[in-house]
Image (cartoon, rainbow, N blue to C red; front, side):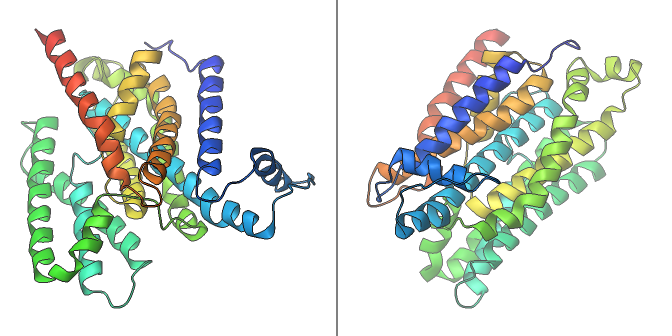
Length: 342
């Protein structure tokens, strides 16, 4: 395990697949853009490169103001959710752990609901901020409850605290929804997830948090490998297991909060992608974490393409698309896990 490394060939393949997925996302939409023109237009934005894309000003606006920020945001959100899911799974040593385990999703839903119901006008900026604050608050409540309940249950106590906090926050959210029934459509549109409001401002808003959480999680791959052999063995190697768990949980929660703040609640990404990566590339977290980051980006970009085209010109909620893929996959993982245990 300690010799496991991310091979250059694996990284090259993952980056190539991500590049193809990004191009598919950029070329998909109501406006028909020439593939060669899109590639030249993108290269023209590089320093010291000057190419004539052949795209009209309207087509360039479609590419750079609508499609490119949406595709990049989808890649960022998918990568963050998958990376956070892998981090949670490493901490809890459970392949079924997901980024919403400690109440981040419920907290984000409550924060967004409060702004949609009570904020004046169109709170396009306030909703992501409130969702981010709600997600962080939910995780903090779960951790505080789990910590004050004693250490006897360890990780299990923290999970139960997350379930309790999520149930409470969901109940509060339901109460708020019922007080303003006319806003239910907007609330459910956010809860089901989507990237329709993506723009450069949204990307810039979550970029710092995304960078910090990503760097921290990737830097802890080797330590998660050590944790996977057990706390006693980790302690014998001089590893402070509790401190590592706290740092990874904080970084994974920050990544989750950043993602849901701008996309709503998109499920299954944090379970599907790390599981597939383990099957294809092995179980070392020095491999699982970076490949989950890239694989999550690929998965959500392609899922967004399906969401945009399946019922065109209407658009499916992105969370519905991931659920169509994720629910059967989750059942398969459960069956596989059960056979292994028996």
